[in-house]
Image (spheres, helix red, strand yellow):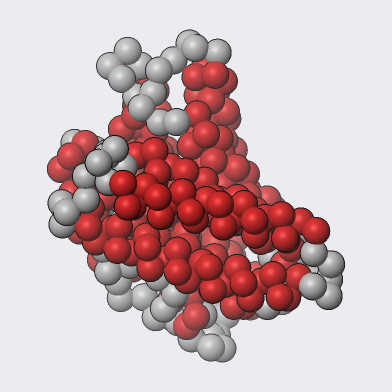
Length: 301
């Protein structure tokens, strides 16, 4: 069982990280639909707005409450997030609430914050609001994936990307459910590594597939990272409680290199120096997920 302080901090950190991830998933889905499916675009935009609301409340409630480690990790916001949002809004015509990002840029953490009963109640209400929104988004993503796989719909998003963002939504949901049961959602180092290694591997596949065919060096580097994470997944899968620590050390080093690659890519895409069909916000999105994984590897190991 976790304490009330842990419940509040972990809930706010979870909603800050995944609330933004979900709103961006909704945007990526919306941007990928064609004019044949305007109703899907409308639903995706509604979910984007719902998760902007969740994110906003998490940021307002969590400033000075979350841990300094999370506040400084780069998983909530990076130096590129605001600019990436501005460019993505320009390219897609999809409105993005950039005021939330400006608030996030001022986030700070406290090592031992005071948790009032009122704050516990507010966090509980936030989680209660997030759960049905998340369940609806999971159903929406599942329906899209089924339609794409059965050739009832075309979207500019890879089927694997839709499956990828569906798995992330399910993880968010399972973590919220654990917290509402006053359990720590991140207890298993091995399961955490297996989940996020797969996410990192798939990021490499997406990057490889969305780069312009002329970007040979970047394509090859992305392909190499996919191979590295495939190997790390195999190592984590066969690791024992004794050997998992050495796997974690290797994974951390690899993910830090990968983070640097993604950061350079985000910068290059924002500066129009890389040829691709990668939205600037997608580049920043996968960078933040690497930062999140790095922080978890350090914290759990």
